[in-house]
Length: 206
Image (tube, rainbow, N blue to C red; front, side):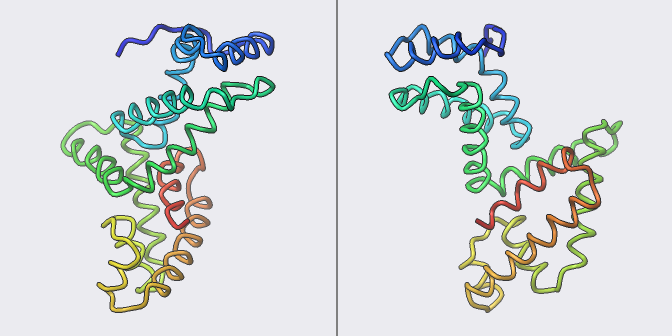
């Protein structure tokens, strides 16, 4: 999709005007908002999801919701901030629903580089994955199993409980403790911005 490029930054008065037009059902205003902020939202999606197709779908969903709920917009607030926050929240929901496929996509990117020159981003992800593995070694055996089954295998709490012959509550407690430890471990052993795509997976505990 070729997207017409418009400046992302608007004056406060211009933002208020376009929000009022959008609330009134002005399709021209919606089109302007779409072209102005599409790439910005797509960049947020790709940064977190690392999957262009999922990111594209997420952006489309955000703009559909924007149009469907245009009556609830508040012209006193920045529409860019509104869209950015909506996108980040939507991305979290996508990750909760597709965490296994997202992780597999990230891993596949590294596998494709075997025997090839490693790019900076791929090398970074290899480093982050290694740090994550090191962190997993510091968990108790049961917490490590629970975490791997939940995050890497994509099992829900009941499936993990059946596989490990423990209660669902035990799985919840062990996974919560594992994620708390790993969040802290990763934040101490890797730069926060670079490790963000991996840290975001640990929001699955909610």
